[in-house]
Image (cartoon, rainbow, N blue to C red):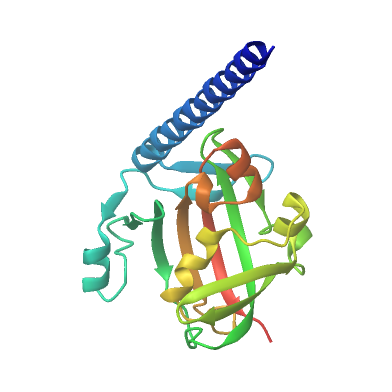
Length: 228
């Protein structure tokens, strides 16, 4: 009897091990596919049209030039937009282009602020515009998050907006917080105010909950503005 129980336990253990390996292999394959999708996006970019109005909503040029963190910091933490530069943060796999650094001041250590965000979210895997609050329906209800800086570690949560509604969580994608170390948060005092504008390519590990669960990368164009 003991031998039978031992045999059963051994078989169950082996079955669990093989299942775990299969799941790990499957996840590894999905991550590899994700990396290939990002590589393709770096070459091709994307262009999204509003077919009803015949206007371009989002235009991301291809042939993106990737620079190192060392070059980024050596150039005063800027990216050359005219040269289509994005910096790659190897630790996170996030690519970032700072289109505008913005007006006002950075969020310093020990400070907290309300941040107003307007964005485009492009699903790189399916080559489609997934969501945006830069349309008339959301003109008066942009995404708002509360954010704080503790010794260079930024934490934030959505208080309202499309991202919170769409993904049923107040969690802010960690990739959205990376630019806060480099941009300034000011108010849009006039239509021509240069509030911060950033472009991001986020792997699933740095993205929203659905991307994390289903393993796909997204591109974001986000403006950051200090709330009242």
